[in-house]
Length: 267
Image (cartoon, rainbow, N blue to C red; front, side, top):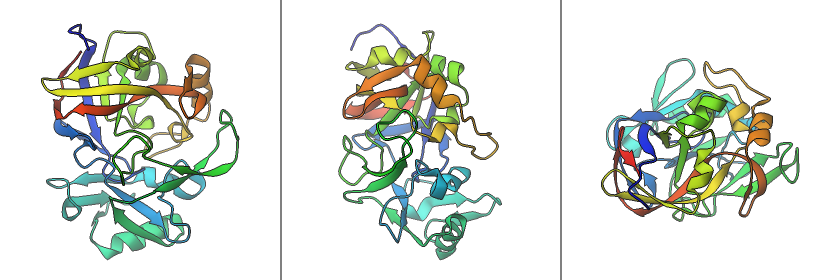
């Protein structure tokens, strides 16, 4: 960690429900579990017991069209899901379970973490070790037990990378860092400790491997099937536990909790 600034926080995004669209925040408390209330809830397939994820788009791509947000503090009683037709459902409303089942064509249940030994289905892209294969994927290996993060509790991406690749919604970061560097400057942050604002410190642990999700249509955002190939050409990184992968952004763990707000300095 140095006093040399890397940039400022431009955008803060929290995703209360895994694979649903999230909410933009002006500020948020961050601790070992990430942004307060982030990836705290999930949809579980009753047949398989797996947590629904758009990484398996044949079943769950429709989740990207739903918007989850808290009407108050992060809690089940305050969670609201906006459906594609504009209806707003409370997480505790049985009608939401029915609607999600109808959307996916599968029997589902709604869960709140902790959810131990969670797994998702992942469709292998052409850049994976097993292209086109549907595998079970354990999640949250570098996150608190029971969390629903893919790997680690924070995901950062630089504005210069987004400028090169497109809409931020495709990449689902928690923090967008406004910077003046080249695209994929985040690679230089790996294995560094960053201070964000006055108190929050995070350890950057790995580049973020990209799956099929950035290529998918969501809400008013059209699909972009060639996007993963463009990322692979520009930034293929050897990621621990994963191998060489098309990457954009970085994963981080929280070392010292604290608050973050838009315009917070990153050093």
